[in-house]
Length: 369
Image (cartoon, rainbow, N blue to C red; front, top):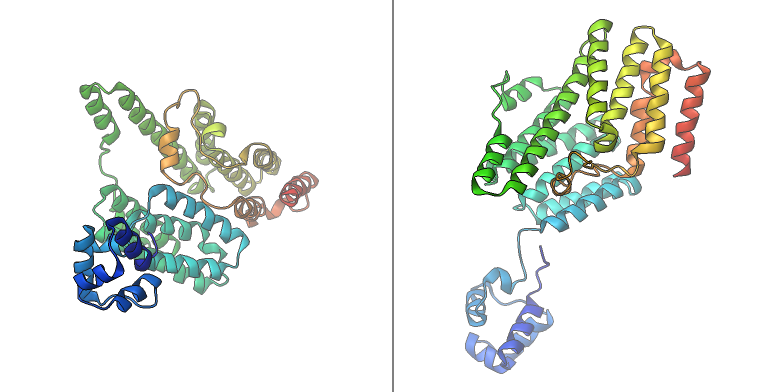
């Protein structure tokens, strides 16, 4: 959205039309001094003159005022990345205040509002108190509700519902999550397959292949995440949890997860270490934490989602999602240490020399950057 800059627009349009301030004043029915003040920004035209001015210059009132309620997608992406970086380097409340001003200015730009939702969801934990964290999550829910109710974009509305559910789950409102998403899983509708087939019928085989790759990529990621959740819910059942771990490991290998999404790989290592630690297999836990840190240090950064030789047509779609860098690098590194390696679940490993060496390696990596 451009800043409202009526003065420069009037000057530019008047000169383009080749008329003087006197001629414009005579047409509108005001003094030349009034027009001069409009053009120097000393005053603004009465609201009743705006339709006359817009008609005279053959533009809309929004164009006359240099106003648009929308922001271009490329500008949204740049703003997202900049704000994510600010959360790591600037005072938290200062960045939140800027976000609030942006929301107010672009309240009708729903793609931007969804990116603010993602920013808040990724950074609320940086708030100083639990009360402030919950307040920010509730603000995020309100934004989601606005997008869902007001946006004409079906996909945006769907994403807003998902993020609203994530916030409600974090706020410990499980019934609200079920109200939003339903209490059971409905039969899967292969939307991507149908869209791909439609492109095939149209003769656009390149687009058909791209859609199929995107569909398969999403199913692979969803299956992987599902197996991680099986592990989480079976920590007291080593046989079941380990079976899920082994299957997830196979998927990670088959689908080249270290290339496609290294975050999935470190989640697998961290959760596997938690599983073994909870079941007193401390040696295996330390081994997986070693792999966790090795992946963080050697393969995680710069954190970007990629395709590979098989998924060779998905990168434009990934870039369009504006989620390749959900948080700044420094915030991610601190989270990897705090939420991963220093998880309270690993308390039994604190005195293990190999665990201590692994922690020191991670600390050195963070300190070097």
